[in-house]
Length: 493
Image (cartoon, rainbow, N blue to C red; front, side):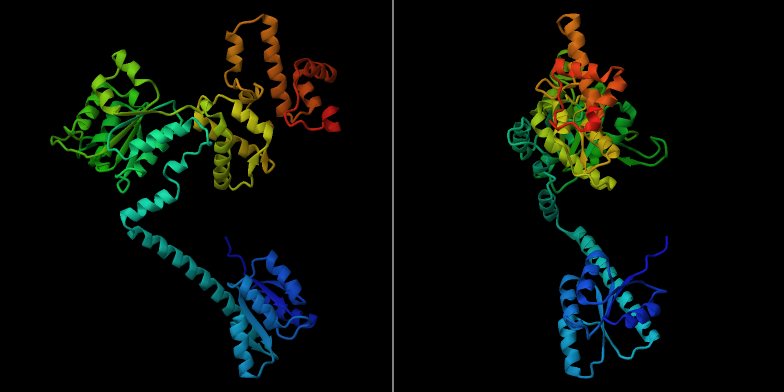
């Protein structure tokens, strides 16, 4: 890809001088011209100008006066002055005031002007490169920070409990308070809650608030992993014990003096349960294919998607391991219990996703938030993130509307009952056939109209009813546009 040509701004009140300068420079540079200081300032606001060539004698404002103001607003732009100055003291004053890089004496030669602008553009490039290298050096220097400084910096950047977004009276507040309390005590912790509720984020916040914050934090999801792979990942392996022939260091050894978070703990086999019990009891572990017994001073935080106590009762989980893990047991609420947090979470996710995908979208309209807040979110934070990603991809405007939301979420009106379970509740509930069919019909009407942005003609065509029939059903069920807009003629047709 060719390098973009630098922009050079020529400022002179004489048209023939501007034309001569343009002819000398336009083969190598993108040329902008201005007849006075005011026009030049407007161009500076519109374009990224690297070099300014300005005549000293201009009506209204001299070249030095203009370049002095330009130096304050765009200090990185290289400034050249065309002048007939012969007084050395005047030249010094101009350098001090306007930071002139080079003076070009009248009458100038085209080759002289071209060389001066070339040097100025090179100077601009070198200054930017120097700035980049300075930033890179500061970044590299940060690797020599002490561990305590890294810990403080991480906490300042919101990687601790402040990163757990929640409303002032959220059910998540009690969870965070309990986690904050246990974080400083070096004991195992069991986090219980559905998949996708943010247990790993909470575990990492506990690590950062603990005395082990200057040591590593590792996380591993055990769900669905074969036992042999789990053993290698956790315990490591000696040379020749696994495919590839190389030795591996396991997470238990890597997390020495740090924290290891294991999610899906309820899925592990009895053999692995015994391994974890031995580690928690201080009896060490043996790498796959090894003979020696190693020890690790790690803190174990476990995540369970089901009630481990019930599995103990059923004989599917070791009671001694459960009690070793559950020194502190903290329940993480599902997203459906945190409806007051959804708007804040959705806006935060949207900001991150919009920045990642380079799309200028900055919010949701009111009806969209109502639908999102009323849905049950069985997939919790992961499902919410997926839905917002899909909405962002489909969006054509800077604000995401309810018409972008998936149909299952739209099929229930905003309300306290939540949309996600409404259809199942109707099918499994009580009431006459007529009442239950009408309830489903009402939700289909709302969902279809929302997708079509309340264009009644399009909704009626999709549903196979007349416009008159659709209006009658809307009046019968009391279905109204949640935005409470005045319908446009197109929507009413």
